[in-house]
Length: 66
Image (cartoon, rainbow, N blue to C red; front, top):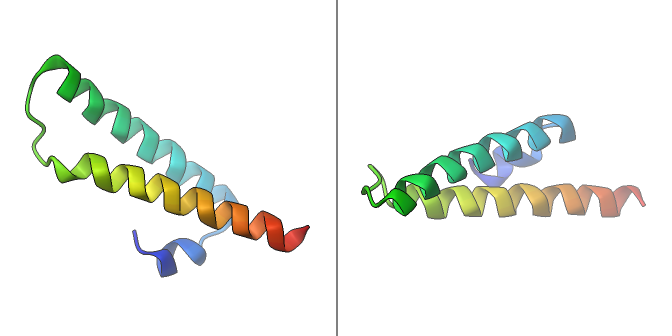
C-alpha cells in the first residue's frame, strides 16, 4: 500500500494490517527456509517495507497526540 492510503486508515486498522503483513512475511520466509522458490521474490521485501511504513505512521501519530 502507498503512504497516502495508509495515512487515511485509523490506527486499529493499521495494527490489523501489520498483523496480516507479518503473517504473509512469515509464510514467505518459511518457503525460503524449506528451499522452495517463492512465486514472487520481491514480495518479502515489499512486506518488510509495508510493516516499516505502518510502524512509522503509528509512531508519528502517537508523537502528535503526546
